Amino acid sequence: MIMNKWIKVCSTHEIENKKLLRFDYNDKKLLIVSQNSTIYAADSVCTHADADLSSGFLNSEGIQCPLHLSTFNLDTGIPQNPPAEKALKTYNVKIEHNVVYVDLKN
Ligand code: FES
Image 1 (cartoon, rainbow, N blue to C red):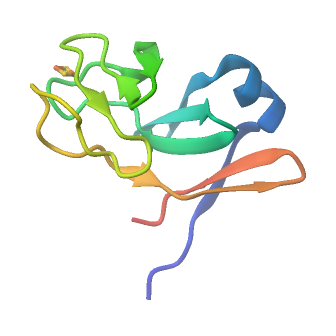
Image 2 (image 1 turned 180 degrees about the horizontal axis):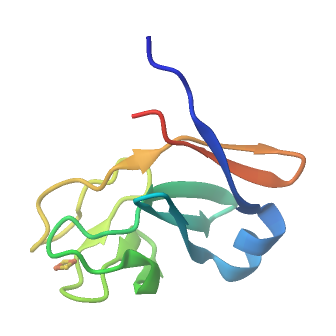
Image 3 (image 1 turned 180 degrees about the vertical axis):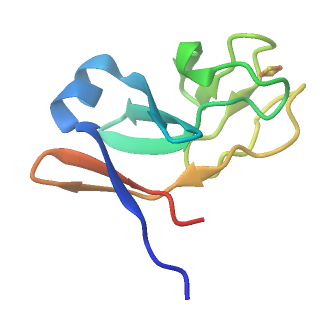
């Protein structure tokens, strides 16, 4: 059985102000994004060549890598344009009492 593993990452206020932040948990580097009133979580390391997506750019299609400019969909993690081909891992998010939690179960 797979257990959920919810970790607390930030307040809703913080992510709504910053739009984009990185949160490290043990060896995981997470990207937290607020876009169109939804909060998303994904790996912060680009699947192409390890660039840090938390220093990338948000656009209408998702998060754009700062190095070679692939954009990843924030829901599915799927790259929308080359050179990245592999999907980014995404995580479930929940909000309780204005605190954002990410489920690291997988
Ligand atoms: S490192 Fe992200 S697209 Fe190349």
